[in-house]
Image 1 (cartoon, rainbow, N blue to C red):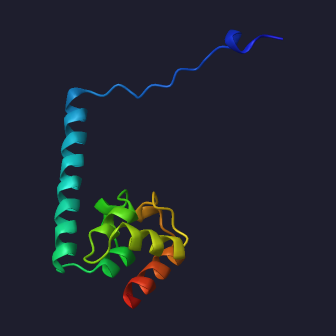
Image 2: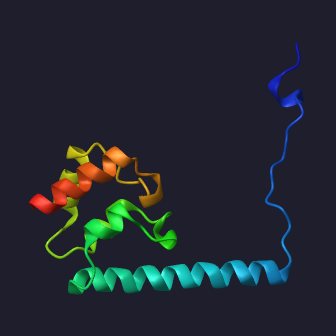
Image 3: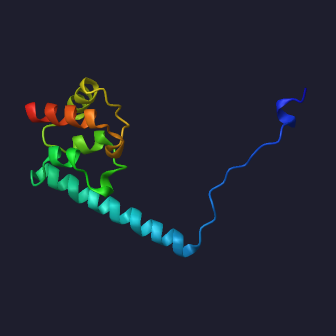
Amino acid sequence: MPSVSDLPTKSFTAPERSLVQRMEALQRANAIRSRRAQLKRDLKAGRQQIQDLLLNPPDYLDSAKVFDLLLAVPKYGRVKVNKILTICRISPSKTIGGLSQRQRRELVELMRRR
C-alpha cells in the first residue's frame, strides 16, 4: 500500500489572467466598494430603508455580508445585530445574496418591529 506522500498531488491554481483582465476586475471591484460605501452612508443618514434593500437587493449587494449592512443602520450596534441574526437563525457571515426568502421575511419583520 503506498504511503500518503507517494500519492500524486493535484495542484490547483487560479487561471492566468492578462493585465487587461486583471485591471477590469479591479475596476469592477472598486466600483462595487464605492457603491456599497455610498449605500451605507445613505442608510446611516436615513435616505435609504434597510427593509427595501433586504427584500429587493441590487446586484452589487449580493456578496455583501448581512452583518455589515445591518451595522450601518442607525442605533444598531454589534450586540443588537448579533441578537437579531440569532433570532432569525442567520449566520453573521451570511451574504445578502445567500439569504433565503424565509430569512429575508423574518429579518424585515423583525427590523420593522424595532
